[in-house]
Each structure stands twice: as C-alpha cells, then as structure tokens.
Length: 288
Ligand SMILES: [Zn+2]
Image 1: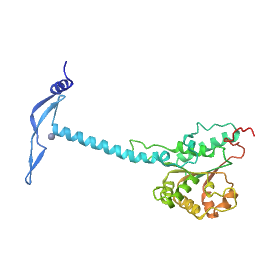
Image 2: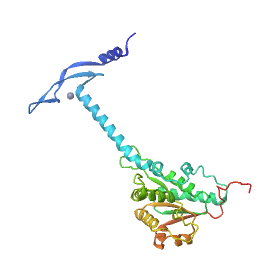
Image 3: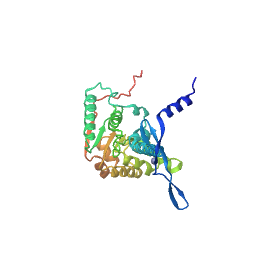
Image 4: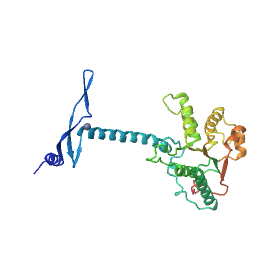
C-alpha cells in the first residue's frame, strides 16, 4: 500500500514540471545592492507560473482574509451589545420575543400590534421615543425586549460600511445599584461613565422600569440628584436616537418624582402604549 505522502508527491509531480523560463522579479540584498535572483518557472496544471509569485499571492490573500475577519468581528460588536451588555432585574426577559408574547386580552392584542407597528417605523429610520405604561406584570418589559430583538440587525458581511444595529436593555434599578456599588468597589467596571456611555451609544435603548430606581415609587419623595444626573446624561446623549421606556408610573407620579425639565425631555417625540385593563400575568393562584 502506498503512503499518503507518496501519493501526494506523485500527484504533485504529475501536475508540476519545471519550465525553461525564469522569473526575474525577485531580488535579494547583497551589501547595499539589490540583486536579481532568477526563479525557475514551473508548469502547474498546464499553466506556466513562478512558484515564488504564487506563494506571495497566496500570502497576500490570506492576509486580506484575516483582515476582513478582524474587521467583520469589529462590526459584529454592535450586534452583540444586546446579549453582552444588557442589565436585567428578571433574567427571563432575555428570552422574550413577539412570538412568545401570548395575548389573551383585547388590550394585549392591540398593544402588541402597536409595538410591532412602531418597530416597523423605527426600522425605516424614524426617530421617536416609546413609552410602555401600565401596572406591574402586564408584559411591558417583555414587549420592550421583543422590540429590541426585532431591531437588532447584524451587519452585512459584504458591506464594510454597514455596522449593523446596536441594542441595549437596561433595567434602571439594576444600573443604578451597579453604579452605586462602584463608589466602594473599585474592581467593578460599572462606573457611572461606563454605564451612561453604553446607554448613550446604543442605537436603540430600553430603559426598563423607570421610577423603580428611585426607591420611592410608593412614597412622595423625589428621585435623588444621582438619579437625575444619570437620566440627564443618558437622555442628552440620545437626543437623535430612539429610546423605549417602560414604567408603572403615571404622568402625575413622574412629575412628582423627577424635575419637570427632565420629564419633558423624556416625553419628547413620544409614542404611548398604555395598559389599563390587562391583568397581572405574574399573579399566582394562591389558596388564601
Ligand atoms: Zn516570480
């Protein structure tokens, strides 16, 4: 039996034979002079080629392939933002899509349809904010995340200018407590500037559960200066970008909790999706 090596050598011999011509493009340096080193041409698959030129062309192609892979992985960073950098209070939200948003009630059907319709406008490049308001457990966060899933478009591998779309889901309470943690924990990367930059940079951002981060949802107190500063920074960076908010708060409560300039800014270019009738999906049947 022939070894693989000898079969390969035979095949190589069959297809490659030396030719009488030489390639004179290759040089080496002797002292300060470039000296031409003739390379004998070969016949490869019926074609006369210079083996050095072939090798160099292959290396260049490999280099280009590698560069385009690196370049593409840079471009997919945007696309990966949603999965890599979102901050949840309830991690099951990461599974939310329009398909698994189950509708049983009239209002849910209408609000799901309206959210999908707004996503369609955003995809066409319109810029506006969306406000999903209603009491807890009606699926506002689910719809908001589903919207991001639909807006999270990967870049076109063949178009080097296409950066794809970056999306980010940030639960405000999580973000606020992660940032506060960095005041004493210097190891954490979730500094105020890191988190606000992420939130400012995303093409589409969900600010989940606005108001819960103040810890005063059920009292009359106002949001702290820290929370105000945080939301100011993010909304300033996002004046030409679409943001989706979810909240349990009524507009009256929002004005009570935040300063009115901030509320007006949040309410700019706003589309509203309001839940009034939908029942709490998280309520369990309990025997008492
Ligand atoms: Zn050559």
